[in-house]
Image 1 (cartoon, helix red, strand yellow):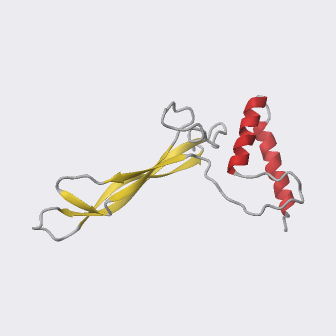
Image 2 (cartoon, one colour; image 1 turned 90 degrees about the vertical axis):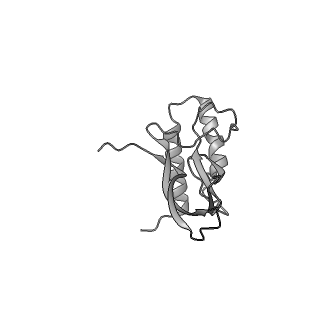
Image 3 (cartoon, helix red, strand yellow; image 1 turned 90 degrees about the horizontal axis):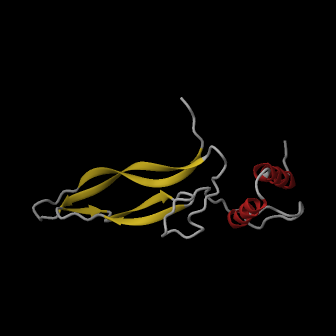
Amino acid sequence: MDIHLDSWDQIVTAILVLLLAGRSLQSQIDDIDMIQHYGRVMSHPNELPTKIVYKSLCNTIEKKVEFEDEEYEFEPPHYIETTCTKTGSGRRDLTQEENRQMCNIPGFDCIQQNKKVTFLRRLKSHSSNGWEPFSQTVPTHCECMWPKLE
């Protein structure tokens, strides 16, 4: 079964209409502004996109975390921590864009995902030349998810 791009455009448009239905005009305009930021909806069926870019539905903040310890040196000496920003979090250090999520469908939330990562460390004293592994749980990404009762 072949599906032509213009039918996908119609599907996306229909989904957007359903999502925006019943909401205030201002919130619809805000969502359309976000659509323009995160992805483009074709205005004419014959208009083909030149490039499709996929964006996360959840905004994140990346922070470089340096290992600081008096006893040990680490390899690598730092890691990148990726945390979710929350809509309406009230954090003053976030720009309006960082504090705004596309994952705003009722029942869906941006959920912080963590991963256990293994690093190497060794004593700073020259009596030990051997590296030893150690693990630490690190925030790695954020996903737009819905709850599943089990």
